[in-house]
Length: 215
Image (cartoon, rainbow, N blue to C red; front, top):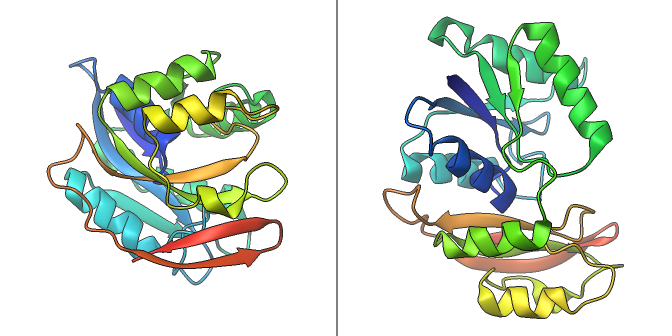
């Protein structure tokens, strides 16, 4: 199966891709990362698009970074997918776990384009998934948190066994952040040929989120 991976740079899309690639018959043709209209920032997590590009380079995987055009997200997403059709893609890989409404949208979009939507993490325990992710050896930083769930002190924390121990005892927090509690950036692990050379930058607040700038 030849697939693209819907890409944010965080742990869920990474784990989905890693599990997809366990099957030797599967091949990732490209990542698709949606960006703001000017192309400077990735649409998710407040991460600069250049850093996402560096992440893909460190894994040796091609990436398409598609700005969201005047006709909206869906049309721009379809444009990016269509640009890969001549490379034989027949599937898209997504890191969704249990948000049904978003899955329904993804399946409709993929059906419109005649490709299969693959959800390697779907309906699995988020506690099991976060433990599996760490056990695989991925290295990841928390880059944003929602202030109604977590405090600013969580920014820059590595997602490791210590992180899991703390997050699991917190009430009303999904350990994989399926409700938007936090977002992450993966900078090393089994999929990488070389680590992403990141430095921690400034912290800032926008709306109800705290963000950590990665350099």
